[in-house]
Image (cartoon, rainbow, N blue to C red; front, side):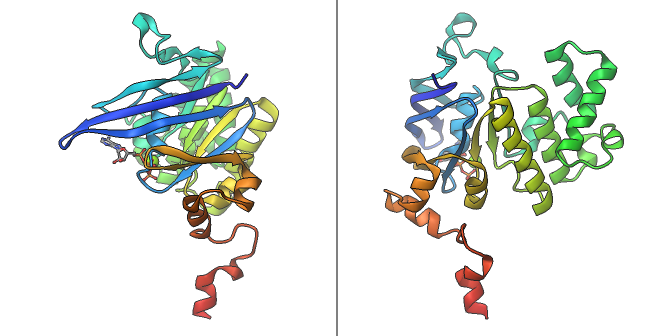
Length: 276
Ligand SMILES: Nc1ncnc2c1ncn2[C@@H]1O[C@H](COP(=O)(O)OP(=O)(O)OP(=O)(O)O)[C@@H](O)[C@H]1O
Ligand SMILES: [Mg+2]
């Protein structure tokens, strides 16, 4: 049984111009240990899909149809009073947001934010939790983690905050990790290190990964399957290599060709040719 099943999810949002459908019959099935890429142009609904899964839709947005099953249970209604089951957050499903501002508490030292996530989950002493937090910060490429742990989010660069967020999400030992452009703000070396860490997590720990990015090269390196979104719908889904080799949708084909060729060197990029 898949660990996470989004089944015909439909979401509307009320705005100044009236009610609008932002997710239309979205279905995604993720196995434990499966890394799936979720791609599509800006505004296609990738972030809203992830936020629905975490029960964190923006004001005005509501689920009007479908189910989201975690371990077979519909978390949209399995919480107290038939509402979204918030207990799923953290140890069940954790998320690395597109905007770190949503996830980090501005008035709490970053080390403490990770430590809290760990202590809660594993019943560790303060010292043990601190040591683990420092270890995690080190594993996402934060140099001098002992010192940085004592900083507030505003004292860190965007890329550093992003890494703190990844460490905090992993600290909770989730079974599914939702990632929204988690490495965009990182330089290439750190990005490679974080991708390695994700790879270890799904291969060794069975972490299910739903990974949103514009960077198809990252999808190619990390994911085994891919779902393509357009206008709030999944228009194509399949095994990564098959979709890359033989996309069924014109839209997918355009997305793939809009990106520098993944399996060839940078020399093959059209732009480089023209400027030569
Ligand atoms: N806070 C919000 N209030 C109202 N509408 C929103 C809000 N956030 C997103 N939307 C709308 O929902 C739709 C889906 O947006 P979403 O943020 O999921 O796109 P996305 O695929 O993540 O795009 P991007 O690649 O730019 O991050 C878009 O039409 C967008 O305008
Ligand atoms: Mg987005």
